[in-house]
Length: 331
Image (cartoon, rainbow, N blue to C red):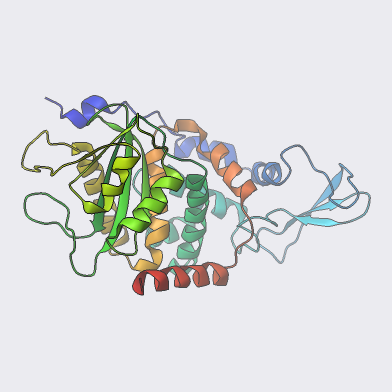
């Protein structure tokens, strides 16, 4: 008999296969067309003179050095300029393969695996993975949870106490708020939010919930007898009772399953996580869960994310992660 998780989870749609991807992007003109459409979704328009015609120029000294030069005023528009891929040192095909492999993976992709697939160093692969995770994080930020039923808990990345309950208060572990939206009490979850907490405190939980979860007295939230959630009784129907994790059909069963899968992904794919990189890894796991039914539309989604992105140098990303880590360490 199939377990209840599989009984409630609908079948995932088929994604574009690697063969489909190769057919679409093996031609260099198709690669250029994909990124040109990202930059100019309504067709080329020079931002200096508003001309709609251009010459496509290939610079031989740069791997992806395609330039769209306005026929009227001569202004040059770089193909990847103005996006998070600005100043990329990879070919267009390498970028497309990296995007395809990363976004269509069910669980995640490590830097060594990506490096091997697109023939770059692990250091280079790690830089691009961070940029791709930023695209996922920006997509996550556009969406809030809205349901009549939620489950919430504070998990700790790494570690597990006897009896199946994820560890709380374990040394050198990071507290993470997990919130799931469901269609009913203790039912299969639809969407998820993850948030790194600077300690096991109510204040950051409260701030995040008000910002990213729709709450009112008609909505129910189930939690695990945690004082960090007691403030919610004034805003929702709160069930904050102790969970018996030895009971096969215990309350918040799905949150426990999803959290365990998430922790296993972090442990097995990334071989240990430092606090500096945890923020983006959480964003990746949240995105993958919430987009597990996307199917054949990943490249169109990716195009939208890149179009909305802004240039970010590797140094700027590193500095931002350093500041983030410092806030957690000194919280």
